[in-house]
Amino acid sequence: MKQKKNSLITGTVFTQINEVPQVATKLNRKDYWGAVKVRWLIGRDHYLVAPGLYATGKPDESSDVFVTANYKLSFDHLRKNLDGINAWILVLDTKGVNVWCAAGKGTFGTSELVHRIRVTRLGMIVNHRKIIVPQLGAVGIAAHLVKSLTTVCAKPIPGTLKQSQTNANAHVSGEIVEPGFRVIFGPVRAKDIKAFIQNRYQTTTEMRTVTFNFSDRIKLLTVDIVYARYKLFAAFAIMFLLSAIDSQGINLYQAINNGLTAMILITLAYFTGILITPVFLPYIPVRMFAFKGLISGFFLSGILFLTGDLGIGYFGIAAWFLLLPAISSFMTMNFTGASTFTSLSGVKKEMKIFVPIQIFMVSIGLILYVINNLT
Image (cartoon, rainbow, N blue to C red; front, side, top):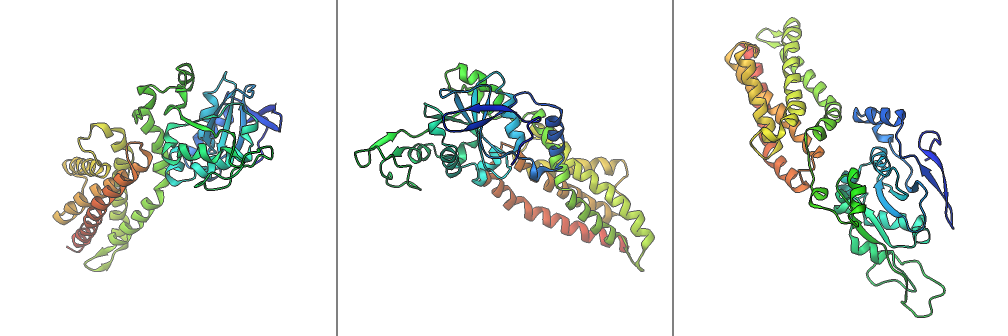
């Protein structure tokens, strides 16, 4: 991808084999505006940089090498925290996905890291053999394989995925010419990089601790709100159609009147699950996200019942006491993909338990809603 020199590339660093683009460590207004837009899913699929090698400051052969994804938000966050540091940035092709998610999907992985080390000829640019990988990418990187697969020798090391580069000057078959790259897992957050370097490349307990505090959760809310909008519109359409059914057949006036009310209630449940529950996540006394959303949904239903906003009729009230918590639970369950507190196995277990419950609640709720319209 061709980068705009005035927005990202500030110059060139010359090495013995090629020229490496030098990037700014100060973000400009365009960078910040791009971050705002991507958090609202505007241009998210194209918010990336070209994979390859970049430089901050004036690095030389002894400078550190930091690895990141080619999702521009991740790239920007790293380069911003390398301000004042002469370093190399090795960008992997993760298809525009952040480090944590890409590691789970396999694109921020051993094969891509080894490939990128080879195609950039990193071993000829630096005189050391260490690369610093973000801790959240550890699940995708096998450090021992990276070292063996980047070892330059006269013949392939048994068991490697590809034949390593062969040195014509090696006189002994199998002789190691250059050692492979050693992976060092850095801190969870890029803001700790300078302290990590000062601590002789050792992470402290605090640097290794994964947090998911209030500010972290708030930053992710906009993505989930926009991402699930089509589910919200589909729910609107279903409730509008069901609202038209009465004892006489199809009632357009009732569809408009009750349908608008239903849309408001669904919207409240939607934002309860996708906004309110994540904000108060640590204070809801259960572990599973779907269960937290269920509790919030019942709380919402109780408030609306006490204020008389759940409508009239026993069947109608019962319907909303099932529908609103189910919607809230489903939306909060979606938030598991944004949290570093969940694992793939944990999410699968949670879905196995709560998806059938949500389907049951919605099914019975819709039946009761129609019955209420018919009575």
